[in-house]
Every structure is written in structure tokens, then in C-alpha cells.
Image (tube, rainbow, N blue to C red; front, side, top):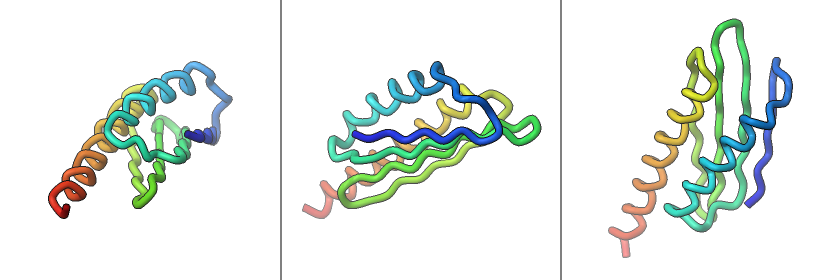
Length: 96
């Protein structure tokens, strides 16, 4: 899977990249058709914003979270994405 990182108003953080790579690897157990992940880290005054766009074969998932801690935002993003992936997977199963 391809992962693309964008840092706005902050320096590149390899530790954040590794943290996000681990989280994305965990998401692949829900859907093995994940193709690309676009991850944007933004700092606006005191807000730390993380935006993730996942592209699968049949769907595009998007999640945004804003808090005062970047790692907390990352955790919340992946809870949202996990919920979306589960919902999508359940819809596919119920239609077949």
C-alpha cells in the first residue's frame, strides 16, 4: 500500500510517520484491498489536526480530528476509520 504524508505548518516528524504506519497496518486486517493512504498533519495555533483519506477498491474513506495533542488525534482518527471499515464490510456481507 502506498502512504503519502503531508506536513503543514510543522517540520517533518519521522516518529509520527512510524506511528501512523503501525496504525495503518492494523487497519489492513479489516480490508485487505486498501490501496492508498493520504495523511495530512496540520498545526493551527494550539490545534493539532490530522486528516486521513483511505482509498480502497470500491470506496474512499475520510476522517478528520482536531485536538491539542497530535498522537491523541491519530488515535481518534483510527477509531473513526475502523468503524467506517467495519460498517462497509458488514454492508458487503449483508448484500451477498
